[in-house]
Length: 114
Length: 111
Image (cartoon, rainbow over all chains, first blue to last red; front, side, top):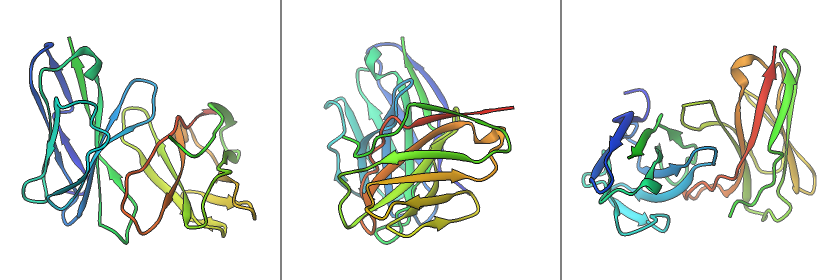
């Protein structure tokens, strides 16, 4: 596709439920980033992949959060045993790689935990 | 933590130039200034970046002071579609590292 695609756009989960959020980066983009954005706040970094390698996961808030990118393209962010504080917009971004630092963002997945 | 300071909000009349300031007094010699914006319900969008020279593209101009401790993003003829949160970010170009967002400036374009 022409841009970064995220699905679903909206997700409502009951507290304790597991969720999986998908990101389809721009074709050929080496780098992929996940961000969490709470209402009224700027995006907060979660994790970063270069191809299939997860190079930085320092922003993941707990061990309930897990991300993967097994074939170096599509990525999935999984949240286990969701809590109300997990409610946020989850943004995915991709970029070409080391020498090109313009990142393109998807529209995000709005997660609401009830 | 973000390395930049921006006013929380600004107003600008439609058709006028919008000048958004940013302070980055601790910027290092190899750090670039980037600007992104986020329109409501969308992901952030890249606008422009620069090191020490002024830069211009089809969206905006970036003016960086000589000491590089502050910069101004200029939208020359603001329209209602420019209403958004604008983020000023410093990062090392050439490293595809994470972007650290601050709180940004919420720009309101007034009709």
